[in-house]
Amino acid sequence: MSQSLAPGGGAGPGPTRGRAVTPLGRPTIRRRPGLTFQQGQRVKLRYPINDAFPAGTIVEIHGFEQAPQSATQRGNQSTEWREIDSDTLYRFLKRELVTRKRKFQSARIGNQVIHHNALSLSPGGQPADHAIPLRAMVYTTQIIQTINSHDDTATARAKTVYEVPIGTLGCTSGYATRKGGVLYGSARSNVTQNFYVVDFVLQQARWEEVICSAKKEFHNFEALSATEEAQYAARIARAPPPDRVTHFEEGLQ
Image (cartoon, rainbow, N blue to C red; front, side):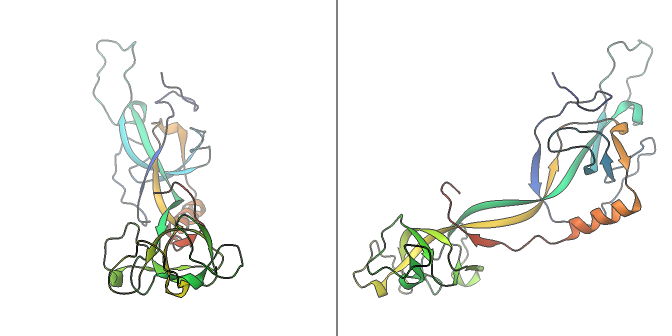
């Protein structure tokens, strides 16, 4: 059985879900004359819905549905949805900047491979005097320009080049080559000839829609002031920060 935290019943709270979107300007509003709030309108929650939607959260109306019929309804009462506040539940969402992490793997071949001298086995240390084994934790000793070979199927020339800062923790996962298209299966005795595939983390921030699973009656919302509307519009119009490469973490895909 569902449970509501806000007065007036309605469908109860539940988990939220999100999908990535591009930040947009003022959404198109579809008018429904019998309803207080309209499709795409930005409003503020008067009451808490769940942990993800506390009171005061600015949300956008993204749909409507007919409220459940009363079990004590008289036989001569119409069950037709009139699309007025008394027989309508509002669906809503919020937009938030979400930061996610995923695996980043340096170039396997080409000019962006990582040379032995760019890695150390300790923070701030010198390059090792021997070949670095696979699955070793390493630290970058210089700024590295490389591509993400983990999930990008484009040619090396078309891929985005990322900057790996000095002191970034990585994990060696393979041996690389700068020419010939041959990936070496093991390190070479002359360390100056060794190039490595190193795993890091790619951190990305994106605007996402978080759709609330609860549906609520009109009195759970209030209209925004002109100042609140302008501040909200400016916030979601901001571009997210650029992607960045950061320290290795186990288990990322």
